[in-house]
Length: 331
Image 1: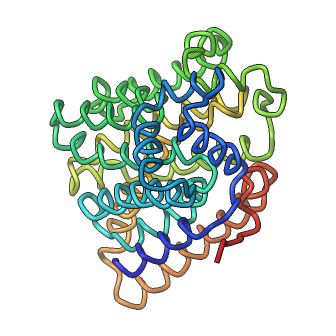
Image 2 (image 1 turned 120 degrees about the vertical axis):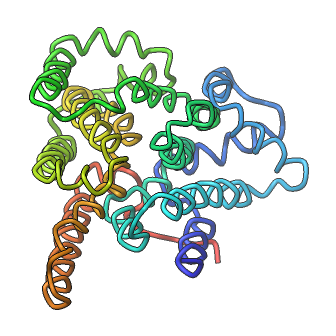
């Protein structure tokens, strides 16, 4: 586990101008050090106070922007690994899914939000333990990197809803309502920096792109696949009821991304659940298989998610859109 951590950390730390927003963060880092922020930078930094503080502290010792990316990369990977270590029943498979879902690679571009996503992943630990104080404290800490993390708090009152027909109808009714009333939802979320900034950007406000449709289909397919084995999973892993509600919210939220692609970033906080839920589903499916049967099953699983990775990675809004299609290092 440590070897994989160090490998991913070095890739994140040694990169140089990999990521669409890389140059923006370099400029902000220098502006923080010189105390010369223009109004736009100051606005979104006010919504990311812990990120601002990290930049300020690093500037006290060095003006090397690579140090900022190294520190943020370490924090992001630490919380992803800590969450996987503490929660997953199969850390190796969870890590593989983290990579196949491109969550690690997205941290090359969306560095503030992916740090928040990693901290939210750790909050799952307190969510399944019903520790309300530590859960909301962790969500708050995540929001100091990216204010959009606050949206994850909506899971608390919904976390123990059973996947009954009545509740599924409730969830999908919410999805239909979101689609119909989406413009008003965007107005309500206009206090979130990137929603406000990107709502007028044709590239990001456009819906029905290849990646948003692919993401919606994949999330819908994953949800219904896991739902088939709901009773078996809940019987063995009672805490997974929380996971199923997260998966349902993820599917609903992705409907918003169909109309406004940047909204898809908000679904990431909930999409994370599959790196924990899928290993439990697969465990149920393979518990009665012999060694050869399990080997064949997991080979098929690994290939299937590798294909998903390749399709998403090379889609227009994947690696190319995120600016990390070609890796380069300062070494």
